Length: 105
Ligand SMILES: [Zn+2]
Image 1 (tube, rainbow, N blue to C red):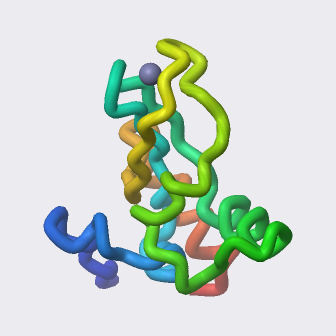
Image 2: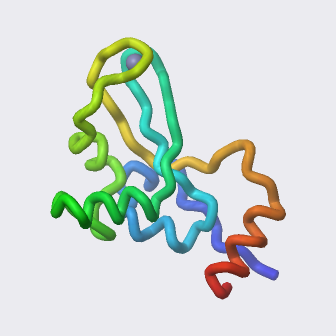
């Protein structure tokens, strides 16, 4: 069984939200550049939300999502976000398999 190679680290900031569909398990990591607070969000939810507000969608580069975040950091009250794809460290191999089954892979 072969698996898609993860996007290289160099390409990650330029990846579009739709790219995540090829890499089950990726989340959009919202990070505060001031205090390093970080939280992961499901890619599907972000795409849905962007679609609802008309701000973007599948083609939106993941790095551009940060510009659309209006809230302040719950930790330092700053507002200097970065967004990128990340593989949650806690994600287990069996979760990946389950997601592949769900997505019909
Ligand atoms: Zn912060």
